[in-house]
Image (cartoon, rainbow, N blue to C red; front, side, top):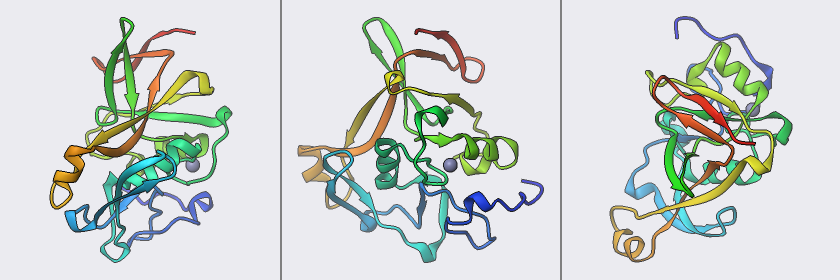
Length: 201
Ligand SMILES: [Zn+2]
């Protein structure tokens, strides 16, 4: 970013980095190492899940998400930046190369998004002056897509295993990683950025 973004009281309650910039609620703090990783019960995924301890002294990692805060945001409907509850009338999802997987169901290719909700206000802040708020890599092309009804998405829990001392245990019994939103009524095409090519309503 060439210039410093204007001060935004909307984000004053967040932790700030050493430059004094607000750090999105969902961001990881410190390295996501084996030593910082545990398996605990997650009330939002309602099963055993991966947790990464925060190291606030080490500073934020803007390229990574805290898995426990990712799940909390998705399930409770919190904005990933400001952490405030977002009513359906103001919910958005961010779609980018890094944030979408695809699944095929009943002949339809459906997008699975793992970046949680953005409120209208944080989406506006990110789009107008600070894409770094929601961008994981510098080159990432982003689209903000309104999702205004629970009928437009299906929440799905992804599972995986963890390298290191927890490998044998989690390979035998994979644990929850993220809660993803499957888009039920929008079909996305990554060819030229992320374009909604068909709305099925
Ligand atoms: Zn927000």
